[in-house]
Length: 67
Image 1 (cartoon, rainbow, N blue to C red):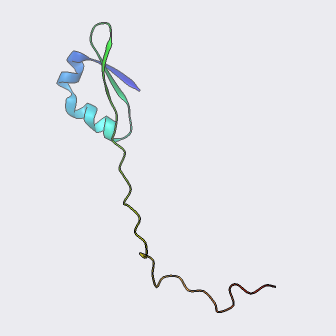
Image 2: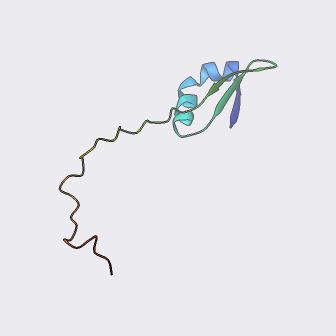
Image 3: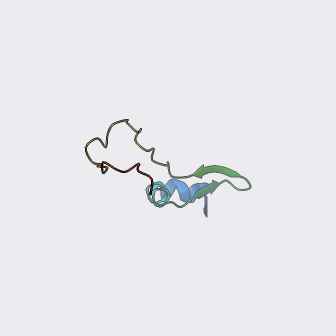
């Protein structure tokens, strides 16, 4: 986690965004208080679709036979 003053953040916004995209948490503060936190957005996974692996898996005829 890195802390920057408001003035530093205004001058280096592009750099701060690049750092956040790499996983760094950025805190921007005014003179006394934390004002903003920049964090990367987590990518969402694609929704699963039934039947998408059809034809990729094969089972033997006796897969459910007892030993």
